[in-house]
Length: 111
Image (cartoon, rainbow, N blue to C red; front, side, top):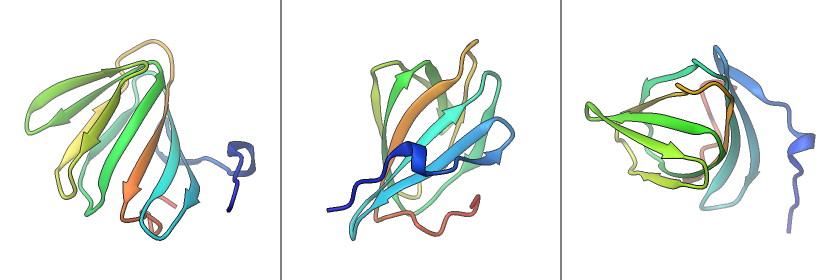
């Protein structure tokens, strides 16, 4: 078993105001922590990985197929693999949460 504290991982600014930290990874999934500052946007993108997540502070607005979905504090979400999506923090405070990817998302373009 491997235990990786968030404090042992440096967050990378993937795009302006969007900070991602890769955490544990296994053979079939990986997990990352995210912090998205007020007004920051995750640009539209897609990846082969299924993505599930949990917002534990703030609210994040996802845009999928032209529709907006607000994921609030204590909400979880699921995005199928290869589905284009974007996200934006329209609130006044940072959004904090975790994402789980299957298969593991190890070779990320932002790293």
